[in-house]
Image (tube, rainbow, N blue to C red; front, side, top):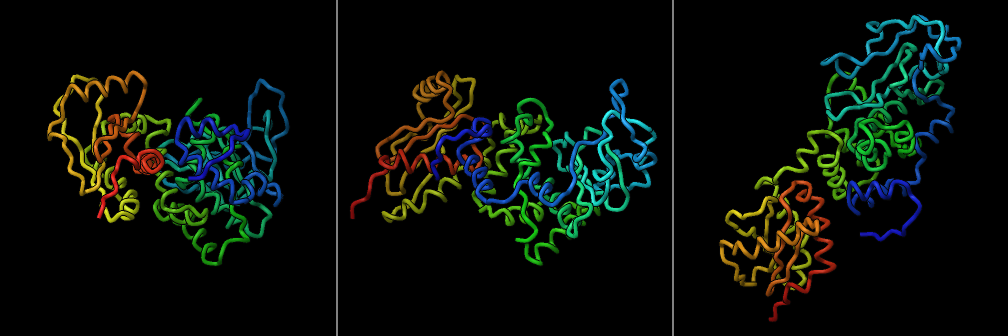
Length: 390
């Protein structure tokens, strides 16, 4: 795992407060692509973006006649899908507005993005307007590619990005608003996201981006395919993808994520954690012709409010002397001391094995947490495992 110098980066503290050093690695990897941001790409190609009109009738007014009778965007009703039918929209019927913006902002190809995207995959994160100029309110952001020869492709890429897990993950970790202040994000959060120059895309990637965006508009929701396309485009490996998948599930500012993060990990979740530990530790044990064994310790009910789970890590040749039902008093004392200090994990060296306890909250039992723990074991706990003599 890379070690980074401390730099003046306003995102650093939030990234580490919500996530771990693994999340910081992913954010740095995106930075190191060297791509323009959405904002710089739009500016360098003389494209238009901005917040929608602001009526504010009690504020100074400006001419808005260029907007008269244009479709006035409203989100599709529940079950209305991910497409905009401008023929069903009401017409803008004001002659003035406090901030009418400019005509180019409302000209298609146009992507309209709500500032409150919602936490459900079933709610659109952006919608494309292709044929007719359409105005929208200040609670939406607009990105127009009018005048660009590749306008449809650029809009398709941004359309897919806003629906990809990688973008919502980046906003969660770097936005000063999302998850900290409220459930909205700032236009600058999208503008700061790295955007792939169309010049680096292959002919296949171009066709695929347009195809996937069209599928989304048509009501199909190929989420896994969209995510894989964006992950591949941004060069993220399987470890990075697991981190991106895990973090919003336990840190997003929505009730479902909070409840999941605090829930007691089910047996299958714990087994998945043990399996990931075993897979990642196996190469280090192979060096000495050993295999790693991970076994959960059975403990009868403890007089402790906070649930904890304990397991052992050992080579298969090591004979453990733990009773099947562990001594409650010893484990109760360990948990009591850990809770006093705010620990979420304890590791105790035994005779040829490592005894580990992790608090029973799912946020600490994700596959990416297993990876982080393996890094800690390789750095600080390898001496717990004796090298077998031949």
